[in-house]
Image 1: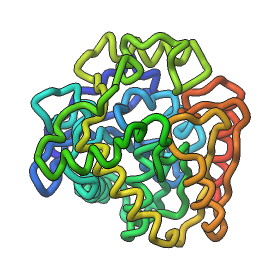
Image 2 (image 1 turned 30 degrees about the horizontal axis):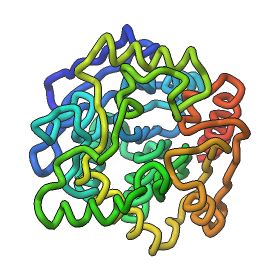
Image 3 (image 1 turned 180 degrees about the vertical axis):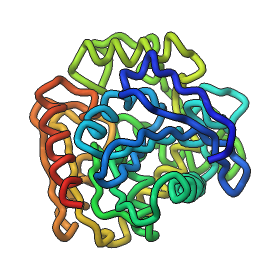
Image 4 (image 1 turned 180 degrees about the horizontal axis):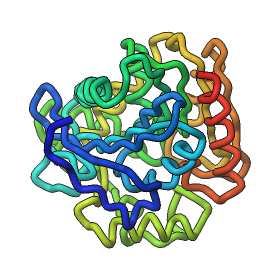
Length: 312
């Protein structure tokens, strides 16, 4: 991490005290915000957020992990949070290629080697798009003793992203250089700050949803809206490439809600069924964000995570 501290909005994070944020740079020059909490003697948790998400959103999860003895590090991926935005419209979800996220992982992992003892075991906790990024990183050799996934993006739910031939549209737009626009039909559901609770597909918990909205309303610079066609095309290419590869040799736990509407439940079930030693837990009544769900669902998922991490 560079000598320059980065902002960490502790007042909205509900995180344990002692968190520190700083800037790192990927090898292509993109500036990234990372934060860490020292914790105890447990395995170091690398927390891979999903699309649109920011470090502060995971403050309560960090609290659970630190209470269990784990130091934790969280990243703002390129194009979101306070990391460098990649498009002239800062609210547009954009990435040139999903391989660019692996540049972020490499820079982050290198920074952690300086911040923590080199022999400290690492584990990974990943949500949604972060689950896609984490799977690639683990396949490519990221050292981790265990991984826990929350509704990982190993496929996209067709009704949300690919109606009206959107997959073909994304690829055609990429060939013509016209993919730096929002996915057609993207509406208020991609604008957390104004989307009403009864229109959300993220959580069944109204209080947590209101807390998430409050974060991006108090700090509008954290907002991110609809994905671009470029993002969609890159995401489809990545999940297809990952589906052709075998699972990495690491203990894996995965949670999936019965009310999942954003990522492909079928892709998750196929991957976990073929993962040696992998465990899939289906959480009745849960929507997409298991760590932001109603207390009983959230507690059940976090218990599964901490059980795997305790053995790492």
